[in-house]
Image (tube, rainbow, N blue to C red):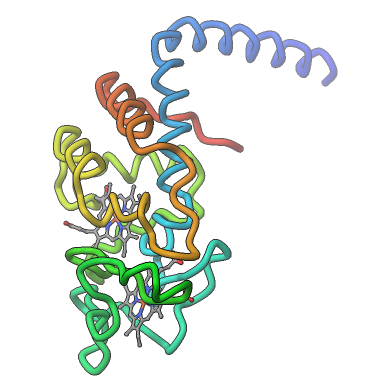
Length: 192
Ligand code: HEC
Ligand code: HEC
């Protein structure tokens, strides 16, 4: 029994060494992905990328007040669309904190593909970002364009009074996303 354990350990160590040689060139890309994950799973992004039907709010990610729900198309319930309160841009700073933030094409991904990544471990988050069946059929070029230019993404760096912006500068995020994508989008190995 003990000998098996020892043998098993030797084999595992050997495999580990082999794997780290094989994937050495991915190390930089995996490091870049760690920055991508930090952004995607920051409150300003993940509050909308959720499996449930109520958007979340605040850094603590509590369900949105007033029983607001996604609706089929992500634009809210028929009786209370998001646009009732959310405009195309943030209200002026003079409104103070707790004013509804605004961004063009607001709201949640549609119910049919929720693009939910809140709380996913890194390997699953990585797989989901690349999966064209769940990411709105975007290849790496389209994803890079989305994270570079999409107005809703950019809102994360200009979220309105009283909300902290995404904790990584936008240009660094985009550069790290590109580095990861250019390497073919390698994913971290599942954590046990
Ligand atoms: C107000 C809600 C909201 C916020 C906040 C938000 N998103 Fe999204 N996101 C959406 C919607 C809606 C779509 C679907 C848009 C489409 O298909 O064109 C989407 C789609 C995406 C996609 C493409 C789909 C996928 O699974 O890859 C990416 C990438 C993305 N968002 C990244 C971000 C990042 C990064 C942030 C934060 C900086 C963010 N989003 C903040 C609502 C939001
Ligand atoms: C009745 C008005 C109202 C409706 C309808 C409404 N919201 Fe809001 N929303 C607000 C207000 C007010 C805030 C700001 C709350 C605060 O900061 O105290 C807010 C904040 C938010 C935030 C910021 C969350 C964060 O990161 O802290 C998001 C995202 C959001 N709403 C999405 C939505 C979506 C998506 C819908 C439709 C499905 C929607 N809201 C419908 C009033 C509304």
